[in-house]
Structures are given as C-alpha cells and as structure tokens.
Amino acid sequence: MRLPTWIAQHLAALRAVLVFTVLLGLVYPLALVAVGQLPGLNHKADGSLITSGGTTIGSSLIGQSFTDADGNPIGRYFQSRPSAAGDGYDPTSTAASNLGPESVVDTLATDPEESSESLLTQVCGRSRSVGELNGVDGSRPFCTDDGVGAVLAVFRAGGLTGPVTRVVSVNQVSPATPFVSSYQGMPVELAQPGEDYVAAGGVITPIRGDAPAEPAVPADAVTASGSGLDPQISPAYAELQVNRVARERGADPAAVRKLVREHTGGRALGFMGEPGVNVLELNIALDKQYPPR
Image (cartoon, rainbow, N blue to C red; front, side, top):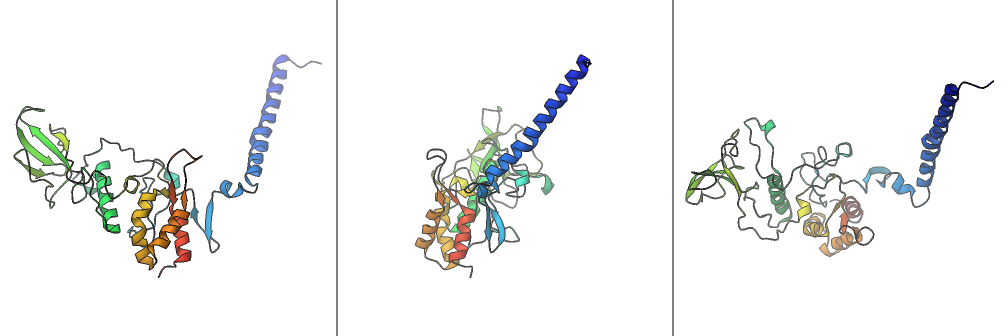
C-alpha cells in the first residue's frame, strides 16, 4: 500500500533532518575537537593558556592589566596598552570605545557620573601618565600640560566670521588655569559644567601647542585596540619601559632588552601587521629571571 504523497514527503524531510543533525550537529563538531587535540594544535585549541606553578594565569591571546588594587601601574612590570573592553580586558565585553578623530570636546556635567572624556582627552591623560611613569616627556600636540584636550570654543560677532567676542577652554574647569591666557586678544575663560558651547555658537578650535611632532610616548601606549583585548605592545612602547622595569627589579637594562627581543613576534605571514611584544609572556619571563624584590 502506497502512502499518500504528503506523508511520504514529510517522512523524507524528517529523514533529512535526522541525517543532517547527526552529521552537522555531532560528527562535524566532534571531528573538529579531535583535530584540535592533535600535537601542535592542542595548545591553541585549548585557548593558548599560560600556567605558572600549576596555576593558569592567563592566555597569550588576551591582554591583561598589571596594576595594584587601586588601579595604579606596578612598576616592575611592563604595562599593556589601554583597553576599552568593560573595565579593561574583559573578554565578555570586547569592544572599542567607538570614539573617533572628531571626539575632542569633553562632556562636563554638574553630576560627575554624567561626565565623559573625549578621545582627545583620554589620549592626552594617558600620554601624561605614561610619561610620568617612565620618566620621559609625555606631551603631545593638541594636549594641555594638565592632560586634557587643548580645545577652545571661539565666539565671533558674525558667527563664523568677525571679531572674537568670547573664548572658552572647553575641557578645563576651575581650579585649572587656562592653557593659553588669551586668543586673538580675548581672555580665555574656563568651561562651566553643564554648558554646551557648540550649541551656543562657539567654533571648536583645537590648539596644537609646542609639543614635538614625534611624541616620546608611542601611539599604542595611549590608544586602545579595536577588540580591547590586544595582548601585545609595540617594540617602541616596550623600549620606553625597559629602564623603569630594570630599575625596579635591580636588573641590567641590556638583559631586560634581551628578554624583550626574545618575546617579540614578527609580522603575520611575514608581511601583515607589525612586530609585537607579548606582555604577559614577557612579564612571566621577568619574574622567573628576576623575582620581585
């Protein structure tokens, strides 16, 4: 007895679902797991975890902070690049800051919880802090000496043209001192929290200042990566930190540089990206060779 056509079609569809469920839901995933456990692949497949003394302390693929309980950098360790992932290097919140080159004006609210820094001010503050930590000049173009964006709101009698009638340093509030005392003969005011100087008609004018064109603090020391999880820093940023780390550990800077070179990887496939220094692996090597005093 032949089954009705519609029943035969449903049975065929059911058999197809069962077959593909077994193939793609069980056989294929298990095959990939098995391949991942082959010698030479198993370490990467398991997350490239790094252990020390039988304890897992991180992954060579995910960066982490080397700070104390108050969030201050620990001087004996090389510092990672900044992270915008959650509270920093949070794999569950991997993301960039979504701030771009035009983010130069801070949000200064009367409630500190509602205030936020522009990308420019974040870069300026980080550069100043990194410079102080490592004993170098942390100044950058378009940054004030106190580590915020050097940006003015310039008001003119004719809107975009005409004589200057008012000038406000939009990222500085009391008790700071304006980074320039006057602009085109007009005294510079400090910003007032809650004021929107752009909406009021001010023309946003970044001021370059006299900082060197090539700052001593490299770019990756002041900007977060796209993922927020970058485990590497540039050789230039590592070199900036060598003397400080060597001093804190009582080590020869030349020996610390040798460790840096040993933990510097080349470009992917020989031509993509830039060389990078794996910070976690380098700091582990330092602890083994020069235990914390």
